[in-house]
Image (cartoon, rainbow, N blue to C red; front, side, top):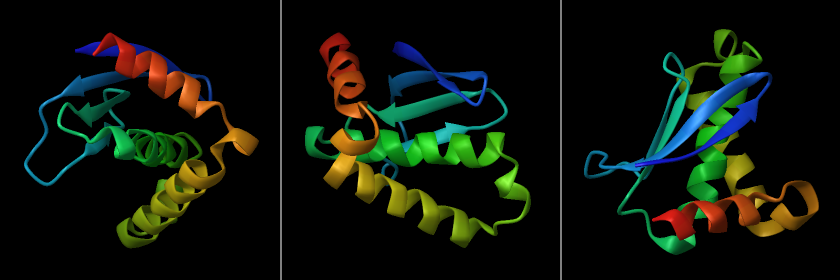
Length: 105
């Protein structure tokens, strides 16, 4: 289910809620410019998962994926998601985005 488009470095990434594999809460498809959050993602993990996947898109749009190996990229995205989850009100208004996206669900 399509939720919303999020601008990232001049590109529009469409955010969807959909089925993902059993172990994945979300993923970022850099080629199709889309972020998918699992429709089974727990509410308490939604903001962190969205921030994590937005971080992947940001890395790609800044061409950092050409210098980071996959492990470094995952660590970076996880650190960003933890910061946003704990201190998001200071940096981004992701909670408002997340709540509006969840309301559509």
